[in-house]
Length: 225
Image 1 (tube, helix red, strand yellow):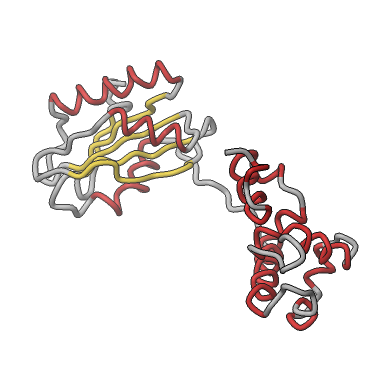
Image 2: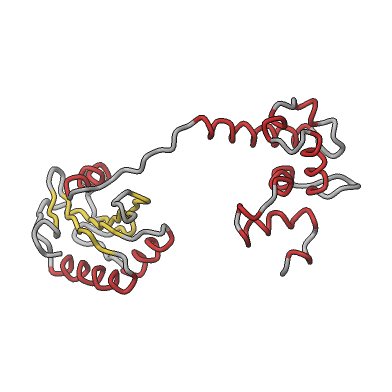
């Protein structure tokens, strides 16, 4: 389905999905917020008229009251509130500082991040921390849950998640509820599988941690990686 075959009110949304947010014009963005136009105008045409009334300036548009916005044919109270809400979100975003991503520089850093999630569990879980090239955390999650003595990790799921988050480096970890820090044969095998698969995708496995309640084992620190 191409954009021309869509109803005019639906085209901005499809353009956003197909071409990305930077390809969408100001009037198309406003049309997406409103959702529909009126009997005589599409959402884009109505949005264009509203923006023209404030010289295409978002700051001026944000100064319009709900009452001002409802003067435009096709803009009821609900649409007016949606417009005002979107503009207020933008205003609050501009006033906030960009949050600095947490950086991992050692196995201890990784342990401290994962310990709250893994240390008190009665069954095994397999977690991964996905990082960028500066060792800053992009995403962390539990990928697999198992039983008392094991959790089965699927290498394909590990790297599918890494690719989804544009990660270039990974740290994996799992817990040993029984309290032993000694890696099993299965632990060593899965570590090697992840390392080998990462080489094909240029995604480095930085470490594999085994966690107990108050301590950890690092494959990297022990020279296994």
